[in-house]
Length: 292
Picture (spheres, rainbow, N blue to C red):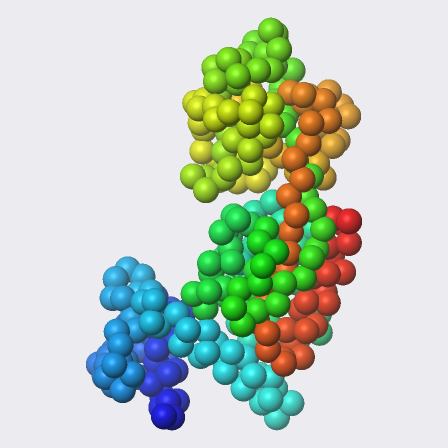
């Protein structure tokens, strides 16, 4: 069975752009033409491939095809680049956690961008969940806490991010004068990045050996997380790289000195013989030397 290139392009455009109308604009065709191509592809494969919605997403059957479409586009654009005097920027989709973006990751992209015309599409995702985006075909690489490679991918160890439980001195005096234990942790509010963020609960289990349920503030920003601690909103786990100066100045203090939480990170990427992907991996590993 051979896939129709126009149908495959329409399928990829709908998922990239999020709607049939936006895909039509990107392909310079009518929405009806996009719809017909998707319908033809689904009939040919005997599966529903696109879940219509806002935005449109791949069905489980469509996820493998989405990855195939993106891999083909990467290989094709790499082959054509020497023959195009003004080649369009190649889109590179990567899943990465917010703390990595705020600390060590962006220099890797800057190094690669100096040599190649690229348009980075960073999908912010918790390191414990980013490998799911690889399975779905939404990204070509991910910073992940999972050492087991996703099918069709390679996993490369990067190092570890160290986190410390910190708060303002006034907050610690108000909530932990009697010490840090199950009861004081349950009574003191803490910040979490989002509903996937388990770092604070993992640290509390290390202290108490049980699940503690304090009041939670959801603060989906790495630097906002630090400001929340500085202003006494709650305590939270923050990257050592970012809070070290504030600990040194006394603006923040640790709840339990030197009781750190290390998160091992891995670089997972498509197992694809593409020079650009190999160079991206080299740049990421170079930038990740800060984690070792």
